[in-house]
Image 1 (cartoon, helix red, strand yellow):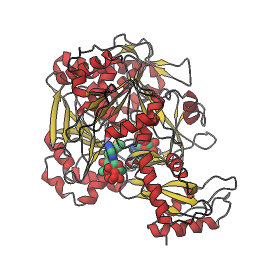
Image 2 (tube, helix red, strand yellow):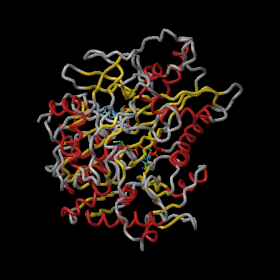
Image 3 (tube, protein in one colour):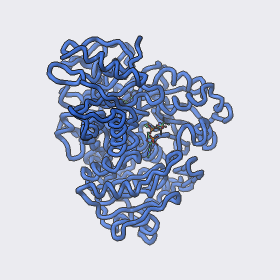
Image 4 (spheres, helix red, strand yellow):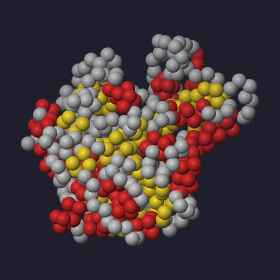
Length: 631
Ligand code: COA
Ligand code: AMP
């Protein structure tokens, strides 16, 4: 069957289609049906089945004779180390950690927060939770203590597993003090913490609460897999919404397994035993799905890379890794390629390496600009496949099914809907728009397996954020259009979420931080275009009456404050003081118009603007920053 037939069946005969795909998974109790719609529009998949994720990622491969195959390669240019871990070794490590966690009382349904850099122990921790049916929540290392505290209070973890430090080029990230600060700030306190001590920085342990990773599990009895219901949460992953309170996206176990298993061959064209490399971070959804779970569920080898595309040590690092580990499919964000292209525009370093193992390059996380795609295609000589997805969906909404039936690539489009995703373009009233017309991208319910069934402890917010604007649909928050061939084009977000270096950030969260500065009366944060990172946040600040301090001092304090509260990942480096912000007559700040001004793009004067003169003031304020360069 080709793509068109498969896709059609996934929509017209959902149950049968996904029951067939469920055959790739080893169930404790097999599902009798795929979709459970009795609580529609809240849907569940494989709810009457029992299964264990870790069993599918490790045990079954060892039992099938893959024990000596490498499961995880750790390649870390920042520490100068490379490690290979076989499936049998992973199983041993994971079962022992799970045993130690179980001995301390962690059991099915408990939450465990994981705060670790790109080390194999992060995967061991995730899989140990999965083995026990505990729900992990991984937090990206670039977030500050306060963000960690917010997640601790929301997920209420029984335990926290962290590393002593992370390594960024030129600096050690002190994870443990950040963790201690977060636990101090949080209302909820974990029962205990397990700290993986890295030799680059050993952390001080708090007696009675903190346990050293090695000592903790030295004498542990390995734990067996605990079966969970297909609809039980496998993990919670927090993502940015429009406010400072992140959304806890739930991933349900059965659908997660089935959907990821389907993608490994059909979308990524990877066979068991081959090396799949995703250069992202375990703290993001891409890292959950394709650094940890997808490749292991499929019996492939996954690569955990601890470094940057440039500077560790040079712009040839990616090519060195592909050559050395014989990577067949490589997945990263366009921003990584922009960074390489900037450093080595001619792609000279590519020629120094043998990339013959590589079949396809996959890009996602942000819009893939044509220049980057063409550069990558030209230099690597392999198809470059853009695909579109979100933390919420956990896997691609649209892509090009390279292992099933490669479709023509149209540059600027992440291609066609993946199974079960019925994409529609709607106008403001929720009416379907014809091909070529720009509108809100919505997906007809139910969403397929693997996508979010709900938000953690926030069903109202789930309904309000995703299901209310267009009844019967999931609102993606992206705007775009479909062409005559059914290819989708993603043009912009419809909310205040911005995308910086492939990382999703909330301007609302940054505004909340800025508004807490004593001299700031009002503020707005917008995402302005950036050649390297796609977008960069920019703060516009109105100071309180009577503040006579030097503006540069206030903006510097604001930049520092965002870094302290949200973390370096916010990449918030620029703020400017303005007298007034442009608003509609009803008081809504005209952020989208300011973005156009900052990017030097033409804009229509909003009909509801209160005072058009303010736009000239904004233009004048942005010019010294090298923005608003139109004339
Ligand atoms: N722990 C602590 N700090 C981190 C971090 C981590 N895991 N990851 C990033 N940071 C810090 C960076 O050091 C930087 O700090 P600085 O302001 O002191 O320089 C800041 O957060 C911003 O990070 P980023 O925007 O990623 O910039 P960068 O210069 O470090 O790297 C890229 C830029 C393009 C090379 C990098 O973002 C990249 O490789 N991205 C592609 C892969 C990816 O992450 N994709 C995600 C979804 S697929
Ligand atoms: P995240 O949840 O962090 O993965 O971010 C999801 C958002 O990133 C999407 O809603 C899009 O706005 C953007 N995005 C992800 N992939 C793509 C892509 N291939 N093309 C355009 N935008 C993308």
